[in-house]
Length: 198
Image (cartoon, rainbow, N blue to C red; front, side, top):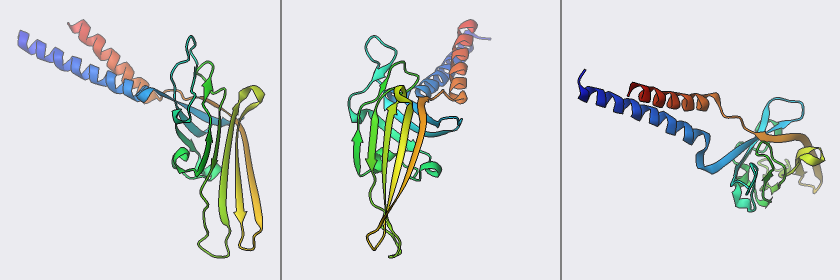
C-alpha cells in the first residue's frame, strides 16, 4: 500500500469520524438550551415540554434566567389539555412570564407562566365562544409543579360555563435520546480508531 493511499484513507476516516462527532454535539446541545419534560404524578408518559435558554449560574451546576425571552418553546399534549400542537408561547394573546430557576439542573425549581389565548368564535351562531386561560406554577417545594387550564364557554344569551382542569406533576430534565448517544459514541470511536491506525 502506497504512502499516498494511506494518507488519503486516514483523511477520509478522520473526516467521517469528525462529522459524526459534530452531528452528535449539535443534536445534544444545540443553541445552548435545555429541555424539561412534564409528567403527571404517578404516570410515566411526558405530557409537556419546555425549552429554556440556560446560562449556568455562577459557582453552581444549576442555572437561572431573568427575562421572559429566555423561554424558547412550550408544548403541551393536545389530547390532554386541548390547546393545540403549536408552540404555546407564540399563539397566546396575553402572556405573563417570569424567569426560570433550576438549582441542580435536573429539574425546574421556580417560575410561572400565564397565557390568555385568543377567543375562538363559533361557526354556528347557537354555539358558544371559547376562551382558554393557562396558568403554570413551578413550586416543587410546595408539593409540585401545577398546570391549570380554565375554559370559558360564552353562549349567545350571555351565560358563561366554566370548565377547570388542574394537574399536579413535575418538570424534569429530558434524558438524551439513544440515537444521539449512539452518534456521539460512533464519532468518538471513529477518532480513536483513526489514531490507532496512525
